Image 1 (tube, rainbow, N blue to C red):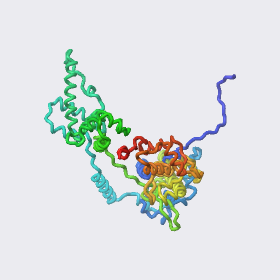
Image 2 (image 1 turned 120 degrees about the horizontal axis):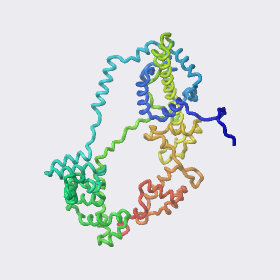
Image 3 (image 1 turned 30 degrees about the vertical axis):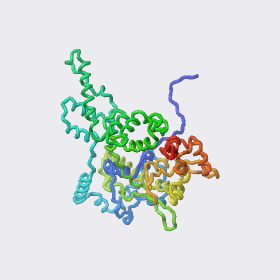
Image 4 (image 1 turned 90 degrees about the vertical axis):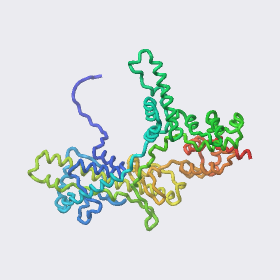
Length: 510
C-alpha cells in the first residue's frame, strides 16, 4: 500500500440543501397562525420588506408580480420551480428583475407603507384592548389551599410545615414526597440531640399534614389512592362501612369485576356491593385535577372545503389575512443610486435576497398546500358525504404520487394543519388511515373496524360478554378480517374493559 502526502482532485456527487430550500420547507410546515408570526418577525428583522394589507388594490395597479399572490389550485407552475442558490452568479438575475420593477411601481405604494399618526394611535388602542381582555390566571390549587390555611389558629412551626406540604403537592393533589424528606436538616446548634429534634419535627409534620387533609377539596394531601378515597368518606353516607371495607381491601377486585369473590369474603350481597360501588364512583381519585388549566387552544383552519355548483368539493386556503409582501421601492432605488457605498449595497442585496426567498416560499406553500388538500378531499369524498364511518384507507405516498411531490413534502404540508369541512373541523392528518382487507377483498379503514367493534360490544349479552376471540369471529361475520391481537389493541385504545370486567353480575342473578 502506497502512502504519500499531496493534493489531488476527484469528482463526486452529493446532495446539499441550499438555505433557500430549507426556508421553503420551514414555511410549508408552518400553520397559518405561526406563518403570520413568522411574517411579522421577518418584517421586523428585514427593513427592505414592505407589505400591503389584504384590502389593498394590488391587481388593479399591475403590481401582482412582486406580491405573494397565487390564488387557488390553478397557481402558476413557476411557483413550484426548484429553489436553488447559485453562489457563482450571486442571483444577479433576481436583482436585475427587481430593479426593473421599481420603474413600474406607483409612488403611492411607497407612501402607503408609512403609517399615519391615526393608524399608529389605532394600533395602540387595539393592543390596549387586547391586554384588557386577556383571560386572568386561574386560581391554583396551592393558592386555594393556602387561603384556607389562614382560617386555622396554628403555631408558627406547624404553619410553615403545612405551607411546605401544600407546595409539594402534585397537580392531582397528592403528596408524593415522604414526610421525612420535608423535614429540614438539624441546625448546627443541636449538640448530640439530632435524633430527638428530628422526631419532634416529624410530629409537627404529621400534625401539619392532618390539617392539610382537612382542607377542601376532600382527599387533598393523600399519599395513596386508598387514603384519598377514605378521606372523602363521611359518616352520613348510606354505605359508609361497606365502602371502607371495599376501599381498604378490595379495590383491585372491584377493578377486575370480581363481585362474587368480594361477596364471599365480606358477606355483602351482590346488590349491596354494586350500590356501594356506584357511590364509590362519585368520589374523586384526583381531587386536585379541577385546578389544572384545561382550556383548549383555539384552532384556526388553514383549509376550507365547499361544494361548487357541480357538487364537487373544492378547497381554498384561509390566508386572506396574510399581508401581501413586496420589496420596498426605497431600497431598490437606493441600489440604483451612484452614491451608495459598496458596503451599503452589499447589505441591501443580502436583505433583498432574503426577502425574495420569503415571498417565493410563501407562494410555494400556498400552491403545494392547495394541491395536497384537494387531492386528499378528492380521495375522501365518501367521508364528507356519508360520515366518518365511510373513511377510505389512505397513505401519504398515494397523495405524493398524485400531486407529484416527495412524500416528505406531503408530511410537512399536512403537519399541524386543520381543514374545515361540512362535517366539522379536522386535522389534515385525520384523513390518512391504515386499513385491512375485508372478506370481499376490499380495503377497510381501521376507523371503520373500530366503529364496528364498538357496535358489536354495545349489542352483546352482558351476562356473557364476548371474549376477544369471539369478537374476531363477529367481525369476520361482518366482512372484516383481523387478528386477535389487533382486536385487543383497539379495545384497550378505546378504553373498553375486558370481557370479565364487562360482565354484569346483577342481571345474571335475577
